[in-house]
Image (tube, rainbow, N blue to C red; front, top):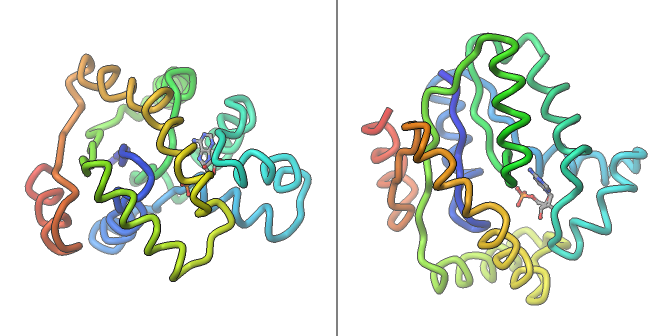
Length: 185
Ligand code: AMP
């Protein structure tokens, strides 16, 4: 099974991606996690990405596409994968289409996790208290939501046109949402 989890920051993609990983035994690939690990280890990638991430801006497409290509080339993705936080722009989605076409691994579903903005703000503020992520400042949160609307939300239409879009309400308990996703799959 090859899935994308699409949705704004704070929609719970990471939590649901983790659930899906446990349920189906396929890797959960989060470009945000890959970047945060690179920042932590102060690799050249991390040093390049950090300033974008701290501002809540997107890391340049070429960099992200390179990361995705490398990760999707690993053996554990043969049985499938769950993408969380990638693609985030139309250019990334096109590059992904190209990669998957080349390797003859078409996507099965794009799960669009829908959460109203006031609820997202509430969750992101709470996550800041718990996790203390560098990009959970008020300013960065606001910017990430704007970037989502401008650059990532157009992917909803992009995938609707391919017939792969599966909208799911992201409001409720983690179990409720996991159940809705299971029903869709
Ligand atoms: P996330 O954990 O998915 O919210 O990602 C945290 C940050 O990493 C984002 O705000 C971006 O700065 C960067 N990032 C993660 N994935 C991508 C992507 N697909 N394209 C561009 N930037 C990304």
